[in-house]
Amino acid sequence: MMCGGLGSSNPADEDIQKICESMKPHAEAQAGKSYDVFNAKSYKTQVVAGTNYFIKVHVGGDDHVHLRVFKQLPCNGGHLELSSMQQSKNHHDPIEFF
Image 1 (cartoon, helix red, strand yellow):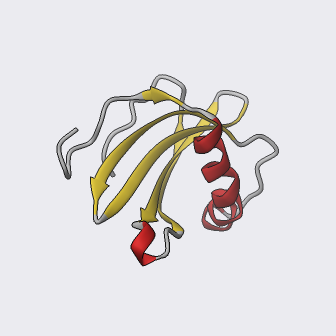
Image 2 (cartoon, helix red, strand yellow):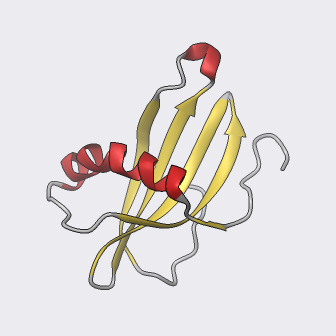
């Protein structure tokens, strides 16, 4: 993967689900609603001065959201931050830079 480029799509794993769970309250606050379901489905990464995770999340029914989560480098604390969110997505929408 080249630095700054968006990587290929991967199935979500346990680590990505943990990121989603930690971002759920922030996503709900941004969306102005709560989600009964919040399951990571797939993701892409972008290496910058840390890592951007672009994650497709199933939120119930046919609805999905896309999250962009920034993880700081370990030397800067390694903290996670919800950078952006796209709503009204479906299973077939590709994960793209936003």
